[in-house]
Length: 362
Image (cartoon, rainbow, N blue to C red):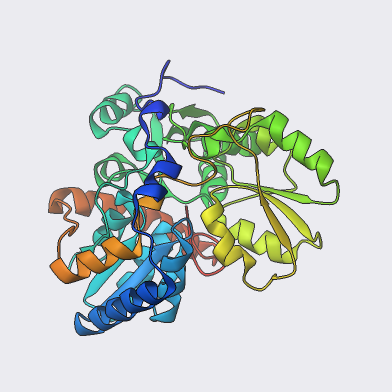
């Protein structure tokens, strides 16, 4: 694996701990929750707004999005849904780069988020300034960035990709004799490199959630459940991917969960996905892959702390106040749109969705 940087720009130890984030959020009784959700529905209607939620957010938000005519998916598909939806306000439950992606594709709409504190370690681990310098040092390489990046990083790229289409795009570029500069996720980049054989120079960053999945713990869990299938997102470390029966993006893992005959599934991705994954397979058992080592300790516990910052309480607040609006500088937006559009055009040329069944990504 060719990783240029000796150390990552983001220290995972600085990330908030998921359990602490969840404990700090308000806890509603059933009646209180019912009242809050009713008020949110009312405000969505009044403001001609639609709620789009990522697979990794809390089940309450995913459920509410579906109940109100919104959408649950991956970040780019959320943005594309928002672009096509007649609502004039998009409320994006997820992390900051997802709100930015929505604004890149739909500049004329108001884009709100329940919180602007919800970051992503991949985004934080790939600051635009150093990344641009890195690109300048390797002008002979095509710059391909994962969707989990800021608008400024997307603006510096030749292509934006999703985890579902990344392999096909890199294969396409490899056949043309192109050398690749990939960012930010080193694990996903290495997986693509192994599959395609492409010449790839990898940025050094990783997802704090997927990076916690451990080979030994997963191996032990497989021994305890010998009939289980193992589903792994390619943001996970190589040794974890090697234990997988299915490797893919969030949408692809959901599809695999439905298609595999196994009644028990061990899932190595954010367990927020369980809400959508369980739909249609209520009789299957989903088990989160172990994190944090043999002692069972963990910081993320298979759930992104920044995703956990999204809740009914701050969704209601943002609709009542109109705060947390996303803005992207127009010059950056135009450049970021070009790299994103190249991916969409490539997907259309293959006559496949950009990221899975109905277009989605991670």
